[in-house]
Image (cartoon, rainbow, N blue to C red; front, side, top):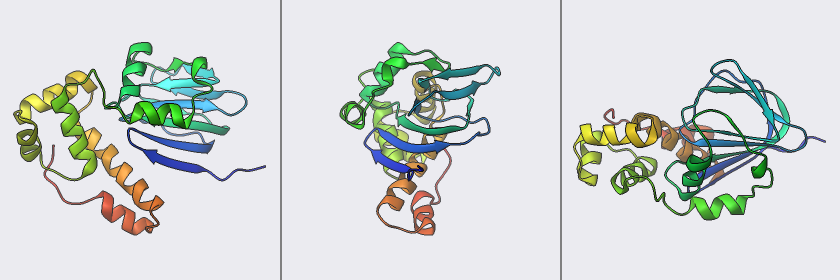
Length: 200
């Protein structure tokens, strides 16, 4: 019996539950935890190696593609939250097998997702929060957190292994999903997500 796909967004995470299809190679600004509901979930990494397990973890910016799965739960855990600290400590830079996460629940992620990372620089966390909450230019953003634009960019690359522009894209996606869940039309959600801004 087919189930209706489910989407949820909370502080520090997003959730999708439903079927998956073969995808093109892509990257996320968040950790991805893919959990099979029966059977295994499959992914292919940048080297072409296929990984199959009941649960897989993909760190931020790791290039990969999903293989078709009848039903799975996928948590996207933002690197700015405490749950991401646990994932950084346990998993490396590539796709990791994680059978211990098979029973991971919404509540588990919600509690740790609500707390800020204890590892990331507090100024970087403030900048990430500002970018998720709305549009702001790099000069304004760096001034807000007390760093030069160059230092803020370097901090993001050093601690997140990605530019803040990539995080901004994640913020836009998050705002669009939140708008859809609030009952807005796709066109309205797109308008909420995208507005003119100076590049980061």
